[in-house]
Length: 369
Image (cartoon, rainbow, N blue to C red):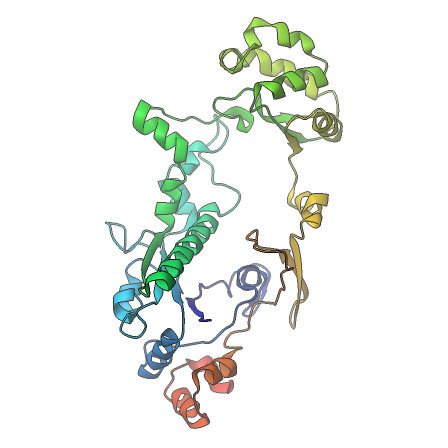
């Protein structure tokens, strides 16, 4: 079984919840990994890197689009060492195109790709998602591309490049609004209370003590909703007989629903509608989401031990395979696995000493061996 080489981002140094290089941000994204520091700008560092490539399955990087070629970590640069190596580069804008040399950040990508224009209240400004969704989705796209590349390499014995970008990810996720626009000239607009653009009712509603979502994606859910909340007369109203009619008369229907939902609590309505078989759920804050019964039942909170932070609790990966429970290990300290990797490569003590003196591992390695 081979290994993957990863060029990490600067997550060790965020401004929030950090103690030196130990940060909760870095812990979040680097659990179960191992660390070796290399300076690829030195001949020794390059030698160690190339020795690792010979025994690895993949090289993964998260850099600016023009950097992988500059530091020679593309497939053409490495195939002579390992013809089956898969080189996955997740960049801001990809390794081709007019923006290839530009740095790409989630916030900027949400603006460029039209996401912010789609998000927010109709009377408010363009709005960014509360989470870095382009970054996160880009990571998943990179992982999927890498898996496809590894499958092809094991089948054919030949690797290649995965040129993955945050820009490509963000544009591709425009999905059906893009298809509607490209084929029918559709121009999406923001909707009040996060309403679905075509299904009514399917949106957030305010109860007496908070907000919740009702989603009538099928006609049967509309029938169940009207019956559950005691507004069965709406079922016989010709203005609300089907999706098309409700969409046309939504300004007449929604105030009726809003008035009824304001009469009781979120828990009341969610419990009532869940029993009636209507898709619904509360709009939780982060604390509520993390303590949801289903969150805990699905094992979505992991705990690791850390020398600086003590017990670290964090959310787990949603990727699953098989029935064996996952094991979690804290993120590595910088260069923590130096000795392990040196042994893996079969380097002698003299080899290691010479490489350290030549600066192959950067200054951090001087005190490690």
